[in-house]
Image 1 (cartoon, one colour):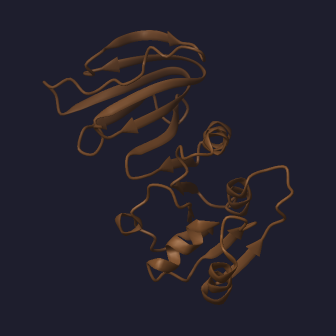
Image 2 (image 1 turned 180 degrees about the vertical axis):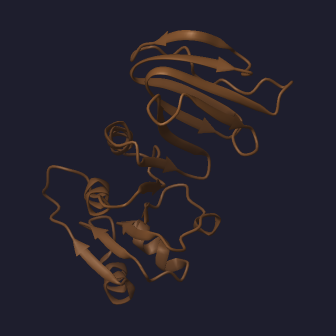
Length: 207
C-alpha cells in the first residue's frame, strides 16, 4: 500500500488520487481533507495551529485522531512518516517551502534518508534516484519545465538530450551545477544516467 501524508500548503487536493492509499492528515491537512468530504483518514499532530472548534470537527469526522504532545524532538510530519513505515511508497503532499522553512528542510532530509519518500505540491515534485534501482531514467516536459539534480552522496552522472548536457560528470554534494536544466527543444524526452551514487531531483513548473 502507498501512503499519502497531506499537509495544507499549496495543494489542490482534487488533483490527486487518494483512492486505495493510507491517508494521514497532518495538522491543517486534516481540515483540508474534511473540506473535500474525505473522512477515511488518520488525523495526526499536536494541532497547535488548529482552532479548538475546528479540532472538534476533526475529532468528530476523521476515522482516527492521534494527538501528539507539542513538546517533542521531531516534527508532526516525521511522526506521520513513522506511522507509514510499512508502506511501499510515501508521498508528502504540500510539504514544500512555506513560512517555516526549517520544516521543508526536515522533509528534504526524509527523502535523503528513505528513497520511498517524495514531496509534491501544485508546482513541484522532489524525490531521489540512484544507480541501484536503475542506471537510466527518462524525463519528459508534459508536466514540469525545469529539472535540477543535487548529489545526496557523490554521484557520477550523464545528462542526455537536456539543454545542458554532461557526460560522466562527478557531482559532489556541494555542487549546484545541475540546477534548472530543461529538455532540449529538439527532443520530446531527455535522460539521466547514474553510474554511481544518489541524487535529489527537483522538477518544477514554469514560473
